[in-house]
Image 1 (cartoon, rainbow, N blue to C red):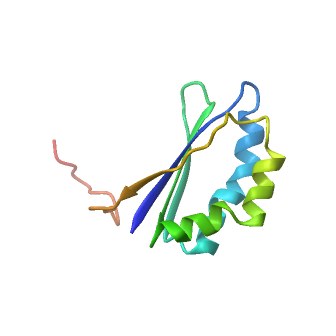
Image 2: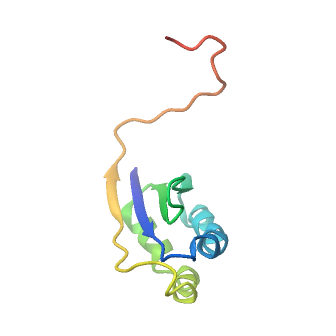
Image 3: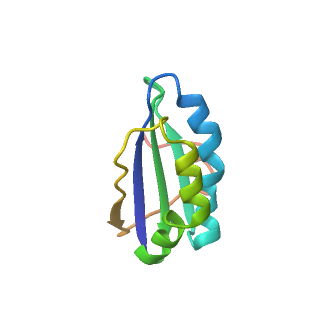
Length: 107
């Protein structure tokens, strides 16, 4: 499994437009074989976003990224984000999640 990370740097006054328009495209990774995804926005400045997804292979991500649908959304949003967009790829060596919050967190 690989994790793909996209760091989106948004042009001033365009953060809300980008967030609203890109969210469905970020979620669409599931249609291309991703098993997990996230799309997060910086609380400070509100112009930086990080998109991550976990795919079985890099080729699965490339099917998503270069698909006609996702390419079209990127074209429609041209001018809202800074280019170039260069994905980074990470080998997943460990991961986890809490199924429920511990009632007594460790100090």
